[in-house]
Image (cartoon, rainbow, N blue to C red; front, top):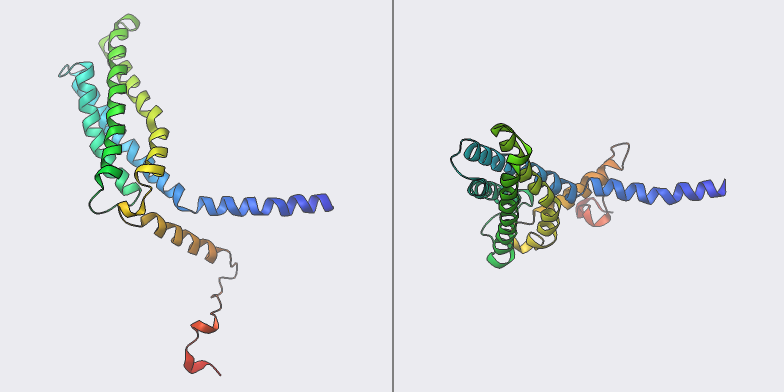
Amino acid sequence: MACSACRTTGSAPAVIDLHRFLRGALPRIFTRYTLGSVLAAVVSEVTLLVTYGQELLGAQPAAVAGWVLGAVTNYVLARWAWRRRGRPRVLRELLPFWLTSVAGLLLSTWATGVAHDVGPRLFATDGARVLFVGAVFLGVYGVLFMAKFCFFHYFVFADPRAGSAGEADEEGEAEAEADGAEDPDGAVPRRSRSQVPSTTRK
């Protein structure tokens, strides 16, 4: 019985911490980042498939065109994900973001170039080769997904002075919601003596 009680009480803080984490700012930011990344990936992929599939551009120029449109979309939605408003800081936000994007461009253009050269040896039809190049391009985007999130969250958008205090506000809202949820009866919290108007004190 004693050991069982120890295990029960020992697991309670872990459950509470998990509950607070799930209601905190990080999951919300990650959700918005994911939505923005998916939308940017769709924009990039459609641009690549249209320009390359219609033979408007070669594989690597099409990858560049897809990267440009996707990067602009990704930047706008990344600022939304971290609730950044106002003028961005050049050295703290703009430069690291676009250097990361350029690194992704170099990797994606190299990968799509390799896929373009290898495709004819693997597939007999043009449609299959186009889909193969598109899959490689999308695969590179997916590999960079988590790495970019960590870099953005802990460096690019980590400084609250870079924009609004959206993350801090979300933390406060989440804590307020959690505190309200902990009262099962929904009772109004008792005010302290300092919060009671002086006319009502005895």
